[in-house]
Image (cartoon, rainbow, N blue to C red; front, side, top):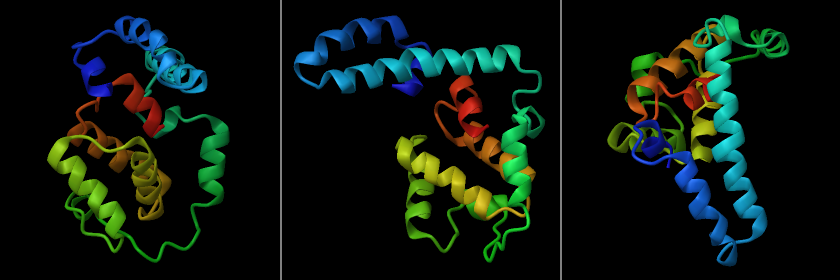
Length: 156
C-alpha cells in the first residue's frame, strides 16, 4: 500500500477502518501488526522528517548508529561495487540482483528483500557514508514510494 499512500490514492484512515473488520479473516496479531506499521511507524517517520534537521543526511543518524557503523568501518569488504553496478544489478549475489531487477522494472520490492538490499549496499560500499548516500539515491530514484518520510526513515 506504500505507493498508494505516498501518492495520496488512499488515506491511512480509510485503510485502518477497513482493516479492523478483517480480524475475522486474519489473526488479531496480524491486524494489530498492520495497524502498528500503518499508524505508528508511518507517524514516527513523518515526525522524524519534520523535526530532524538534515533528515536526509548521514549526519542525522543517532550517535549510537554512527558509532556502530564506525566500529565496523574497517571490516573486510571483499566486494565493492559502484553505484552504477548496483543500479544495473551487476553483483555476485543472484538474490540481490533479482530484487534490484524487480525494483528497476516495477518500482517495488518486498520489505524483507528491501532490508536485505540496504544491508548489502552497506557491505559493498567503501564507507558507511557512501553506503547511506548510494542507498538514499537509489531508493529515491527507483522506488515508487521513494522520497516519502517512511523511505527516509528506513534508509536512516
